[in-house]
Length: 146
Image (cartoon, rainbow, N blue to C red):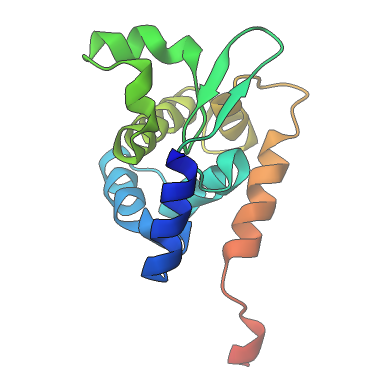
């Protein structure tokens, strides 16, 4: 039911899901020093901009919300006073996603390894390719500028 309400709100407002969260992407991009466009590409890759998305993984963990935050992060969330249900709030989900991504880049560098870290597996992981494809698709067409 919440998904339907979300889709109706986006439809009535004339906004795409991406633009509905634009201020949040901007805010947390700045706060955690990660590119806004990369956060947007991750949201597209992970949930197609669905804040109610959930996914059960083969290892028994779950991914929750817009940026598909994995339940392995629940101890950290609890330490800052949040619960799993809070991950359905786009502001919490995007903020925590930007935090995770920034720690991944700090640990592995601003490269494919850092991006794969967000997905939970560094080696032998095509995740970064999926995100970069969405990043490229979202970029404005420069051919008409010539």
